[in-house]
Amino acid sequence: MLWGAVPNPGAAPEQTFLTGQLLVATPELDDPNFYHTVVLMIQHDAGGAVGIVLNRAIGERSIAELLTAAGEDATGVTGRIRIFEGGPVEPEAGFIIHSAEYRREQTVKIDGDISVTSNPAVLRDIARSRGPKQSLVAFGYAGWGPGQLESAIAHHGWFAIPNDPKLVFQADREKLWQEALARRTYPL
Image (cartoon, rainbow, N blue to C red; front, side):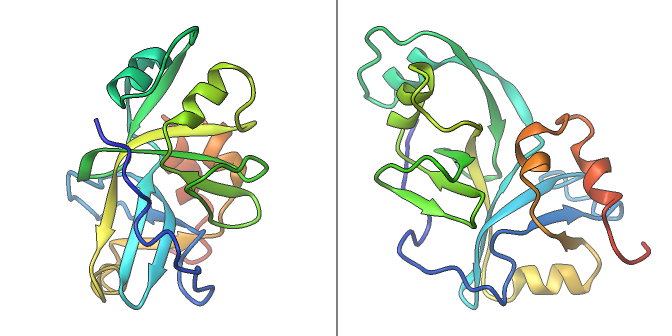
């Protein structure tokens, strides 16, 4: 299990692109990697796009087990955390999507409400009630090369909606896609 760097962590988000928005799969998108998914876009610019799928829960693990697997000290750490499949690219790479009030080395601010960190020490902070107020742990990410995402959107595979922390952190994961789909501002 790796805790790699967030792709291009020094890059400033381009507000003219989809960074910080939610990418929602249309009902017609039948790619098994993205069927009925909602993706938080953590980077999107002329060089491509990176996002984390928010509604593919894959189980629950102990925080100590995750820390140990990452080579971190898990002494005194208790608790369990829900794990999500963030996407098909680098499924061993871990990311913590979290509320923006929390900051640590390797934290990338997505917008005023949400950040992402690839440092597993966040898990220790969560276990000790010193972490972010809200969080979601995912392994892997979704990635698109230059122009790929734009083409998929043009072919009606995806649409974007404004980010809403309630959808990212509090929505029922089983109903997230339907809730996001209902926010579409133009007909299917």
